[in-house]
Every structure is written in C-alpha cells, then in structure tokens.
Amino acid sequence: MKTRVAVFFGGRSPEHDVSIVTGLQAMEALDGERFSSFPVYVATEGTWLTGEALRDRRNYLPKDSVLKSLEAVTIDTSPTVEGRGRLLPTRGGLFSKPKPIEFDVALLALHGLAGEDGRMQGLFEIANVPYTGMRPLASSILMDKAVTKRMLAGTGISLLPSVVVARPHTGLLPEAAELSRQIATLAFPMIAKPLHLGSSIGVTRAGSIEELRGGLSTIFRLDTHAILEPFVEHLVEYNVAVRNGPSGVETSAIEQPKSTSELLDFKQKYLAGGGSKGKSGKQPGAISQGMLSLTRELNPSLPAEFESRLRQWAVECYTAVYGTGAPRIDFLCNSQTQELWLNEVNPCPGSFGYFLWEASKKPLLFTELLTALIDEAFTAQKSIQLPPDPTHPEARLFARA
Image (tube, rainbow, N blue to C red; front, side, top):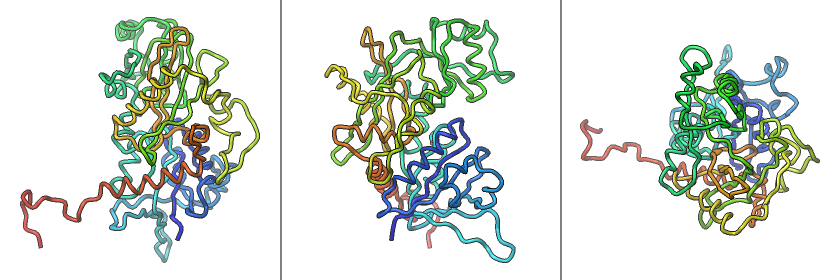
C-alpha cells in the first residue's frame, strides 16, 4: 500500500498565501508510485479543511461555493501504538458518526507564525505522528531572530548587532524619546523587521526616528516584536539550504538574489519575473510561481575561502539545533569589504527551496527531496518512542498491575 501523506498548508500567518503555493507544489511533486496525498488547508481564522477542491489553485481563497464541498477536521491527539495520524471530522452526521481520516505522515508546508515556529510541530509530537521538517526546539529558536543570535553567540559565526523593540501594551508605537533610548547602541540608517516572520514581510529601511516609527507601525500590526540592525552598505545576499544526507550534513547550491532596490521585498520575492511552467513529479520543479520566479544567480563565482566559510557556518548553525528538515540559511555581505554575517534561518523555506537542491553539485530533484524529508520524518519519530510505561522502576511511586 502507498504511504498516505497529509499535506498541511495555509495557516494563521502573514505568510498564509505563500504557504498555499508551497503546499500545492509539494502535492504535485510527490512520488505517485510511493505516496498518495491529500490536502489539509488551515484557513486564515484557523479552521482545518480537507477536500479534493483544495488541490486546485483557482479555488483559493475558498469561497462559499467551495467551502460547502469541504470537510472541517481536527487532529486526534490520542497517541496510537502504530503512530498513524487521524483527522476527526468536526461536523457529525445526524444518524451516523463520520469516519476518521487516517494518514501515515504529515508533510508540513506551513510558513511563519503558528506553523513554522514549533507550535504545529509540538502538536504532532503529542499525537505521536511522523512529520517533516525541524523539531519543536529548532523551529521555535530559529523563528525568533534574536534568540537565534543568542544561540549562535560564541560559535565564531559573525552576526550583526541588534536591538529588539516590543510592541507597546497600548497603541502601536513607542514614543520617539523612548524609542531613541532603546536604540541608543545603533546608528542610522538601520533595518527594522518583524522578529518572527520571514518572506521579507514588513522589512523597512529607516534613516531617522520618524522613518523608524513609520516602519514599526506596519511591523507591529504583524508581530509583537521588531528587531533592528545596522543597514549593510553594498549589500549582497547569499542563501544556502542544509539537510541530513546519506553520508552526513549536506549543503545545497548557493543562491545570490538579485534586487532592483536596496531591499528585497515581498513582491520582488513572490510576484516578480515569470517564465514557463515546468513539470512536476520526477522532473525539475515548476519555475513560474512563488520564489521560483525571482531573478537570481545560482552558484555564483565566489572565492574558495569565502564559499567554504559560508557553507561551514550554515552547517554549524544546523547542527547546533540538532537539525532536521531542509532549512534555508540566509547571509548578508558587504561586497566592498567582503564582510559576511549570518542573517536568519528559514525552518521551512518557500517551495522547500527545491531549486537550490536541483542546482547543487549532486542534484536532487524536488520529488527526491520530498521523499528524503518523509523518510527522515519516520526515522525521527521512531527515534523518540518510549515504552508504554516509561517510568524507571526505581522512580515508581505507585503499584503497577
């Protein structure tokens, strides 16, 4: 029998729409000989929905006519001996109880808050269901840019200095004088961005307190905290993905995004460019949607020592959190001085960053990448299993039958 894969996407996150693209691409690219899949769409208000209509991109966001054909479900968190997942319909029949929907593994294509930050991962840990990607600890650390910096402090990996500003309890903006006090260790110009989001959402360049307060007014509608960093002159970005390969930790091709402005914003990442639609399955992935339409250079010519340092820092970051999945690690560089800093980590990058693996020295197609992630999910789930009664005999305070 084929392994049944539940593909989760959407979510209560500002990156909701990007997640839909990733989820649909993943369903198309799964190896049909080994896997059967079905969609589980997490709506913007948090409802879990499933149904065949969710395979069609034209049905998003679902309108009332589509919603009528979908089934609302929730996960059964009662751990099963065999470790299979069960989705329970939330709307019961008048005379019969709807049957649970069973699956073997969850393919998580969720981005941002309440999906990529450890919360969903912890839910599947409780349910004892195999799931792809990073574990709860790594997910929660790496989705917080400030905690990531604290975790990597002392490793030898270069990091930009930063200040975290919390959203005030009343209103969206701190007073100018108070804000000036908080950022006294930084100089203008600076970059402000949401502490817990990706996809370049809310990122702004500020040259004054007034501009900074304007940027924070947007950030604080999306996140509870903002992180401020010095603006890097002559900015060049480099991105590389990391995963556990057959013989150890592997790094992907290096990506150098190209931007028409100082900052690579959300629209440039997800709406720019174009191109012909590729094939799914065991062919290279589709290149016309999502981040894949961004103008970029793959495997740019870099000095050997510089490239080695970038890759080594990516591996060190990955192993520091007992890495699983295939996160993308992003770096900032001053092209004039060749200074390099680790910027942030994306536990579940857009489209799983498959184009980085297809362009690596040992090419890995999208289908193969997803298969590897699913195989790893089963291995990770198996490694944490405990006996039915995990209490050590010497720690038992109550009699057993």
